[in-house]
Image (cartoon, rainbow over all chains, first blue to last red; front, side, top):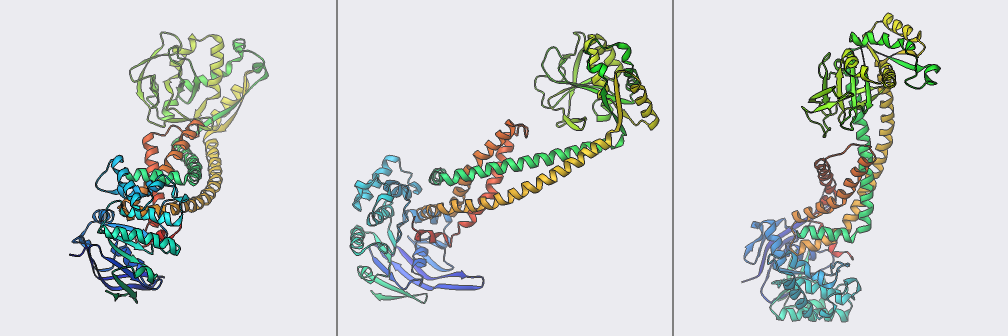
Length: 228
Length: 376
């Protein structure tokens, strides 16, 4: 059974006053457990829009999305928010970390929104465990503004996995990193997949995409399989 | 709770901008309150003024002769006090009124007492004319209805018969005297003479006689009556008077207030518009600084409604302290009276809701993810 199933997803944006730009024209995709999927495509083709819709961040105009056996269209906003918190981990190109916070404070954010209502001691345990998985336990109390690009992305990964999500959504996770650091980050992601996590990766880097089990391409608002 | 914590963190992060914004809000609240207070005073003045339309009131500008100015109270030759008799006739027949204001003549409590004499009560619609009655202002707390107040002699005890409506006032010269924290004693001139005046020392009697003369207003008197009063008083050696139409004086004062307020309003409105534009830009910049945090929170389990609440709490904490401070300042400086905490809180909530619209409109579900792509 798939963890996520998207059927005929359509999304348009208003471009100016009258023109409506349809970026996704009927996307179908499924994500299974421990599966690594890459989506490639030119800039502006709708890769990020798709990952945002699948990650329940942006509403779709049409289509059906089933996440964890639940039809998203039928869920209330607070249930969708709870699903974002517990089912998905999210990594973006620019890290999206809060500069003034320490690594621990950044990683803590998903736990603060969690329905589990963990105590401070339990939260710290989860945070340090996540930072350990990305090899940054020793930087737990460092402000992220003092960390390197690679370290920041690993803090972002720790934040994405701290709530034990089922699917990791990564939007150009290595886009802001050099080749060596990108490899290190991909190794971290690989080790997480081995633990049973699924990965949906958006990238324009074919080398990074080639590390995945399936590669899709978005062109003219439609998804096509490159490698299965 | 989590929204409160994050709102505090947002403030901590933008502390300089927040402080600057708060300062602007504080100044704006002071300006708006001052202008609102002035407009309120003007409207109140006008409303009270129109109530006097049914009377034709004449006042007398009083000038003391040198013989009085160079003599101490108590030593003025009583034969020179003939002018008093002319006014007494008008007061006794209720064809005029006078008052003694701000004189602390109660022995038991240190409180301002206004004694309205003659037709004062009917002119200002207080209590009953020709019958002694004591009334207290709505904010007087150390007396209550039924309490006894001693005025002058021990035997002159007056029982408080009622409480004046809030914002009761009367015209004193060209100003409106508020009675909320005063005690008002209404008496006929005869009662005043028999119960208070005759027990005074000669020094006090001379002093209060002059106050009564100075504050005297004739009601609905014809031109001949006015001339008669003026001639009789001016023939005495004590004072010299010039009759004036009191209604006109008050209307002129009202027109002057209107001109001043219009000018002040234009200046303040211009300042408010410029500050409003500055505030909007400042708020947008402060909100923009929070957008990435909002997006991160959204990704990790916050709802859009939760973000709106967080933005509202953020604005509330920016608006609340300077507004409370502004009202404390305004009260301390005497620009406005004490505003209840409920009214202040309501104003803060209303302002926060209105100002929150700006950041809330910024938090759009279709665009918020764009903030993930920005370097923080």
